Every structure is written in C-alpha cells, then in structure tokens.
Image (cartoon, rainbow, N blue to C red; front, side):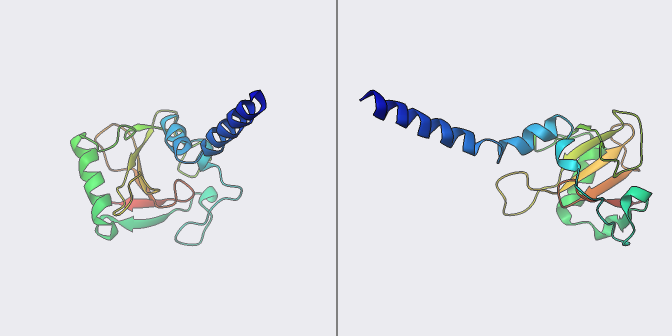
Length: 151
C-alpha cells in the first residue's frame, strides 16, 4: 500500500515538473524583462540581411504593421489601458539586438495574435519616455529578431 502511494506521488510530482516551463515560463521571463528568451545562439538576421549585432536592423513602416500591431501602438501613445498585465514591463535588451541604452529605457508590449488564447510571440518594444512611439521595434518571433518601426 505504501509503495503504491509513493509511486503515485512520484508520478504526480513528475507530471507537475514536466509541465513547468512550458506556458508559465514565458510569462515569468517576460515579467523579469525577457532576458532569458532574447539570447539566441547566433545573432539573427535583420530584414535587410545584415546582422543586427552590427547595428543594421530591418525596418517597416506603420502602414506595413498588422491591424493588431497598429492598435498596440495606439494604446502605447494613449498610455493604455493594456490588455495584458505584463504590458509595459522593462525590456532589458541583454542580447543587445536593439541599440544600447541605459537600463529602463525599453519597455515591451503584447501584439495580439488572432486565434490564440495566450499572448503569442508578437511584441512591440519601445524606448524612451512612456507614451512615446518614436523609437519602437516589432518582433514576431519573441525577441529573436527585430524590425524598427519607421515614423
């Protein structure tokens, strides 16, 4: 009887540990500034084909943004309210994929993805004072690469 109970506990504990790090870790990492997920093994390529590590980022215009991304920019300018509680948290830029600035310069915001129940991978990261969208970047691959949003 004790062996069956112990075995059941081990199986349950393994299932709990196996589920950790899938859905919840993305949110926890983001709340801490998304530093763990933004450190790819190799520097990603920008839209222009040049390495972002050398400072060359691809660009896109506001007209090229999806409707959801344009909505997110409008919310940033208005100061919210944002649909997710983690919107506006610090983005550390520890992989240095964006231009280097002092800690606290960048903040990250969710871009809704139609059909998904979770936050998905699309984000806009803006630098400078809150409600300013002059130094913003779009990512659709959860911080692996960025495109600068041109005014």
